[in-house]
Image (cartoon, rainbow, N blue to C red; front, side, top):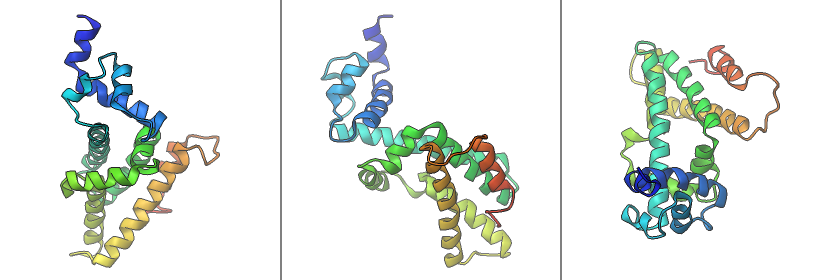
Amino acid sequence: MSNETYHHENLKAELIKKGLTLLDEEGYENFSLRKVAKACGVSHTAPYRHFNSKDDLIMAIAIEAHHKFNQCLEEAVNKYPNDNKSQLKEMGYSYVKFFVDNPEYLRLLFLSDFANKIKKMNDETFCSGEQPFNTFYKAIERCQSENQNGEADSDDLNAMALSCWGLVHGMAILIAKKDFSYEGDYLELVRKILWGGTSLNL
């Protein structure tokens, strides 16, 4: 199989993969389909078979990132099918680990100069059930309902959601950006924080 044939058969996936790398390196203004095509070793017109513009490609990259992120959170839930508190704590750990392992996704979705643009596009594209925050929120809702032996109060839910999301998101950013100096295993420290009962007192 020739290199050209390989690229044509897998072009869309290759464009998304190389596009993420280039977008992370170049930023939105300097990003172009022509540059992605060059990185993939195909003609500058080839990407237009799959994407009408660079925004279309960025949307595809963001969708893949959200899908992988949400899948990671759902896998954490599935580890503890009958334990709501453990689900939430494992999701918190998985949240941090996902972005520490994939800092380019963290920058893309939250830290880039076009993150708000991506968020707006995602809100218009995804149904609520596919949003990672909704997956996280549902886990919090189950915990609160269990604690209160019934339907959780909306103010309590929002307060808990902000607290839990802020905690793990902050840890993910600090560790991924290496802004927190620690000689040990960062992820083990995160697990200790979440599972030690010092922060998530549900």
